[in-house]
Image (cartoon, helix red, strand yellow):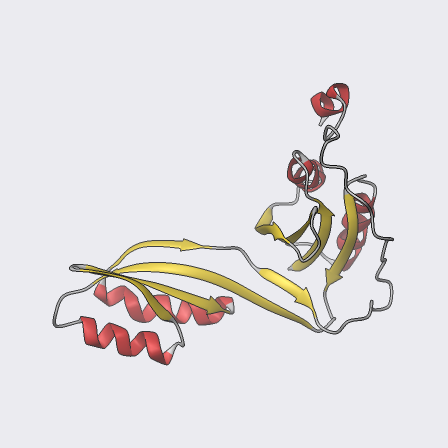
Amino acid sequence: MTTFVVRVEDRPGVLTRVAEIFRRRAFNIESLTVGHTETPGVAHMTIVVDADDTAARRLEAHLYKLVNVLRVDTIAQRPAVFRDLAMIKVATTAETRAQIMQLVEVFRARVVDVAPASLIIEITGTEDKIDGLLEVLRPYGVLEMARTGRLAMVRGSEPGPGQKVLPEVEVDDSAPAAPADVAQSV
């Protein structure tokens, strides 16, 4: 698996154009997470695909061709921090509630909602940690689960070798995302 961390202008249509890069080249996106950053007008995308090193370099080059892409980090051998988030609704009774709450503590998760017949548990961590909690909760009855994709951030503060850093771009939110004829072709 290859993980891309992409910084883009936070504008309508950018996600579609980025996803189209992967679709055109027949890569299935295994995980996609998008959110705001510390910089107004800039979004952070974490994209996970099954690609070898050669394909990853090609995908990175194609991403940089998009006008709205500001920076691309391909995380392979570089030190990085990865996290997922899951919310799990599990069935509970008066007899099982204490057992489930002990399991939640062991996994360093937390209960975010309590109802008479269920608990909603929030857990953040690696995919393996979330899968582990899910397995121990299954015997109690998992009623519902919602899970984010992988979120990644490269460790350290300086760009690594081969990492391109483009100058800061001022984003004009009042301008249209793309001309109508370009939007139709994407």
